[in-house]
Amino acid sequence: MPAMRASRALLGAVACWCSLVAAAPPTPAEIAQICAEVEDRSHCGRLIEELQLKRLPNLARREGNALMVSLYPSGAATFIDSDDPVNGRSYSLWDYIDGINAVVLYTSAGESSGYTLLQRTTNRRFDLPAEPQLSPDRQRIVTVDVCSSHCANEIAVWTVSNRGVFKELVWTPDPAWTDASAKWKDAETLTIDYSTAGSASGVLERKLGDVSWKRPAST
Image (cartoon, rainbow, N blue to C red; front, side, top):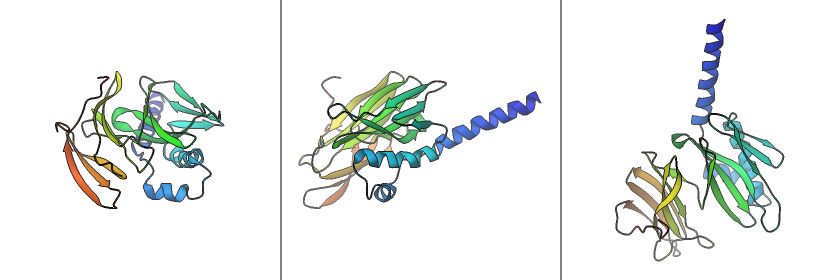
């Protein structure tokens, strides 16, 4: 019996781990379908959360306006939605990044939106302007805050460690782009897809050692 209980516990742990590893952020097609007739950004986030809670059944749960995310190895981080007209903010489960044991939440406040990265081992939380993409060596993430209006027009590389998440490098396209996305080609190179105001588009590669990157003044 003790051996059987141990086997069941091990299987349960493996099943839990596999359910998290299988996570993936919602695809553009899923977002378009789910949020086709939403009332606002918060409503969209909540509908996406319903999908992600099913994909990540052991990671988080929703109770009214409270989202509880499990920490590792124990405990929970609670995020409370607020409809305050000045300081109100809503949180929705978006993704799990296995490589750094972190949870990504979609956040919205009025007409603005962003993301919060939660490190599950330390309960540290970091606001990000765009969805993070993890590098192959798990040492960095990249965010692309580029759009036609109300964006910083900035591509940023952040270092990730047990001490937290810190902005390491930034680059601003000039002239500004209307849309962009970035993927890691390798641990030191980004592949960036972009569009311009004239409807032109292109792809470029940018190594982290390129002189065009700037370091934030705070670092």
